[in-house]
Amino acid sequence: MARPSACPVRMGLQPNNMIPRVLSGVQPTGNLHIGNYLGALSNWVRIQHDYESIFCIVDLHAITVYQKPEELRASIRDLAALFLAAGIDPKHSRIVVQSSVPAHAELAWLLTCVTPMGWLERMTQFKAKSALQESIGDGLFQYPVLMAADILLYQAAIVPVGEDQMQHLELTRDIAQRFNALYGETFTMPATKLPAVGARIMGLDDPTTKMSKSAAGAGHAVALLDPPERIKKTIMRATTDSGSGVDFETMGPGVENLLSIFQAFSEWPGAEMRSHFTGMRYGDLKKQVAEMVVSKLEPLQRRYREIMTDPGYLDSVLRAGAEAVTPVADQTVQLVKARMGLYTA
Ligand code: ATP
Ligand code: MG
Image 1 (cartoon, rainbow, N blue to C red):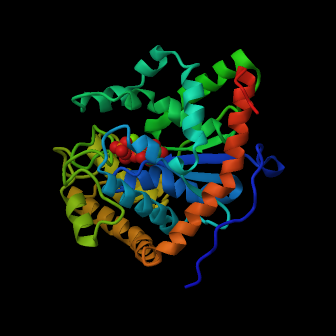
Image 2 (image 1 turned 90 degrees about the vertical axis):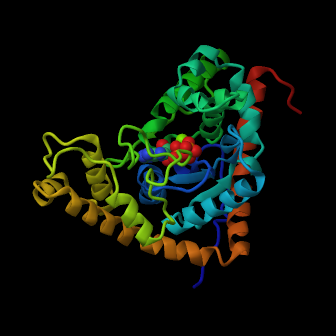
C-alpha cells in the first residue's frame, strides 16, 4: 500500500492564514491504552484537518521518571506508529519527537524563571506521581513548565487533551499571562479542548483512579495493541458494583466507566445508550463493551503492524515533522530571549 509522504510545507511563527494551531502530546512511557485513545488520539484525528496540527511524542516528559534507555527508544517509535495507525495524516499534521527540537528544553528554562514554585506545588499530578517515588527528581516538579513550553513554543491556540491535563493547561495560561505582563505581549493564550465523551477513562480494576500507562496491574487497562482475547478478559473482569442490572440513575463509577467506553467508541447519542442498556445485566454489558472495543481496535492494530514493517517510513515522517516545526520553535525562542534582554546575535 502506498503511504502518504510527510508534508513538506514550511510553517511560520503565526499559523497559515490565521488557521488556529493545535498542539498535543503523549509520553512514550509504556503501552498506550484506550484512555489515551479516547481522551486524546481519536480527538486529534477528528479535528486535525480543521487546524494546523502538531502532535508530539514527549520523550523529555517521559524521563521525569526513570526509563530504561532501550525501552524508551522502542516506545518512541511505537508511539509514532500508533499515531499514524490511529489516523494522524502526515501529509497534513506534523508528528514530532520533542527531544529532536532543542527549543522545547530551551524555552522551558526561560519559562521556569517566571514560574513561582507555589504554582507547581499545587499540581495534583505532581503530588500523585511524587508519592510513588522514593526520590523525587526535580524534573517531575518542573514537568508542567516543560508542558507550557511545548504549547507556547508554537503559539498553539487549541490543546486537545484528557481531563487530567486541565490543571496543567490552566498553569500554562498563567505562565503565558505572567510572561506577557512582565515582558510584553508574546504568547497566544491556549484553550483546552476536551472530547465530549471519554475525557476521563477510569481504571478497570479500580474505577476511582484514572487509567494510566504507568499504573501497575494486569486488569487496570486495555492497551491499544492487546490481542482480542486479552481485551475481552480484562473487560469481563472489570470492577462494577453490587447491583445486577444497569440503572442510569444509581449506577456506580465502574458501570459508568464501561458505558463511557462504549459510548466513546460507538459515538451513540445518550438517548440510544439509555434505551439500549437500561436494565441490562452487567455480564451482558461487559460482553458488548468488549466486542465494541475489539472491533474498533482491530483496524488500528492492522495498520500498526503494517507501518512497523517499514522503519524507513517512520523515520522519514519524524524527520519531516522536526524539520517543519524547528524554524517556528527557534523564532519563538529568539523572540522570548530578545524580550527578556538576553543576548541574541
Ligand atoms: P503516564 O501514566 O505515563 O502519565 P498517561 O496514561 O497519563 O501516562 P499521558 O502520556 O500522560 O498518558 O497523556 C497522554 C494524553 O492522554 C493526554 O492528553 C491525557 O490527558 C490523555 N489521557 C491520559 N489518561 C487518560 C484517561 N484515563 N482518560 C482520558 N484521557 C487520558
Ligand atoms: Mg499522564
